[in-house]
Amino acid sequence: MTLEIPEVVINRLPVYARALAALAMDGETVVSSQTLGERLDVTPAQIRKDLSYFGRFGKQGRGYNVLGLLAKLREILGLDRKWQVALVGVGRLGQAIAEYGGFEPQGFQIVAVFDSDPAAVGTTVNEVVVRDSEELDTFLRQNPVDIGVVAVPAHAAQQVVDRLVNAGIRAILNYAPMMPHVPLDVAVRNIDPVLAMQSMTFYIKRQDLTGAK
Amino acid sequence: MTLEIPEVVINRLPVYARALAALAMDGETVVSSQTLGERLDVTPAQIRKDLSYFGRFGKQGRGYNVLGLLAKLREILGLDRKWQVALVGVGRLGQAIAEYGGFEPQGFQIVAVFDSDPAAVGTTVNEVVVRDSEELDTFLRQNPVDIGVVAVPAHAAQQVVDRLVNAGIRAILNYAPMMPHVPLDVAVRNIDPVLAMQSMTFYIKRQDLTGAK
DNA sequence: GCCTGTGAAGGATTTCACAGCC
DNA sequence: GGCTGTGAAATCCTTCACAGGC
Image 1 (cartoon, protein in one colour):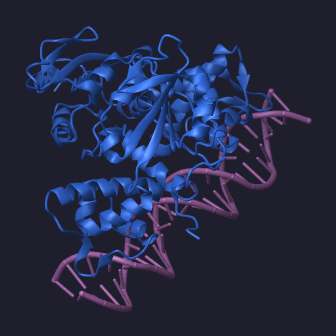
Image 2 (cartoon, chains in turn green, yellow, purple, orange; image 1 turned 90 degrees about the vertical axis):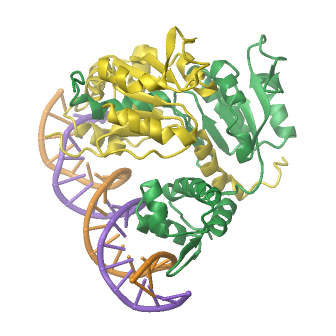
Image 3 (cartoon, chains in turn yellow, blue, cyan, brown; image 1 turned 30 degrees about the vertical axis):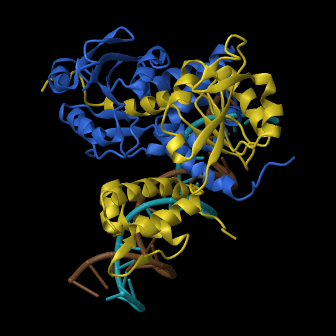
């Protein structure tokens, strides 16, 4: 029914939602695609077209109601509820993720943490006890978890991903520097700062030979 | 001359390079677009087309020389040299970035760290002294820095980005949850795990109503 | 026989441009 | 007059399919 909404469109919706939340905080009640587009460096036509996949939320001559559109987007994206997250890997990176305060206020709760290192098992990160990775499957089958976060070394990541997928997880946020293989019905997003840097260097390679004035 | 290579293509090259490095470690000397594609979930045609923007690196009937192609890609991307990085913001996130061991081995050296909090200035993160953000401009004009990493709160990020850009930085890795405005000749990559999660929820919203069995 | 490099075809996404409404 | 929603056009990107070389 919701037939074929491009993934690029879905990826932009959270950006719109965030901007609308900021506008609401500023006390704005109405916004046009023009104004919103300027804030986000997106063309007004793109915003309108994106939204048109889901309905008609604006008013001609006025624009969009900020809170109304925000609520709609949150509903479309499923941000109007809480999501349970399991984190695998509590090395330096995993700990930083567990202690990062940005997920909770957005409704993403880290309810379980796993590691394969016996020295880590039983310790506590951000008030959650670290379980043995061996318990992963059992735990996931007994507790509702929506999203898996992978923060293990690259060589162990595919195995972890496979176990998450086999346990029924349909969304994975992967911090390991590799591209996991998953079935088509599993969503994956990779957080890979090194790749990001390695693509920027292509663009700055040209000019610079010391930034003398 | 290098006229118009799509950005999506550039973004895939580091992925190919990483896979080739892994193949080299496994002792493979030759690889076909078919085989490489299977590892990366990319079609062989795409790999060949991407590479064709830069030259003819393969041999019919054989495939590509692993080390040869890797060297070519590294050269194209500018990964065959060291890059100087400045980090702005040493809160929890900034510290985690400074202490993350993944940049250095890829040639990205954090040579300077800045923060606006007087309590942080003068302390040391990962063997680099934290400087006052006020010194940002002066420092960048006197020292060669290629890439700026932004790890400050969202409300301060645009200002930091502006200062980096004004000081001549042409590449920015942004960890703040906002979309910075930059001139066309500045490359930006955003690391935004919350946005990543918020787009995945759209896809898992449908089904799940408790993962019974 | 296997595999690259590449025009051409096909598909996806963005932008245009305008009818219609407030 | 300002602004949405949207077909149609334009652009961008991917895939096909095959000539040509090893």
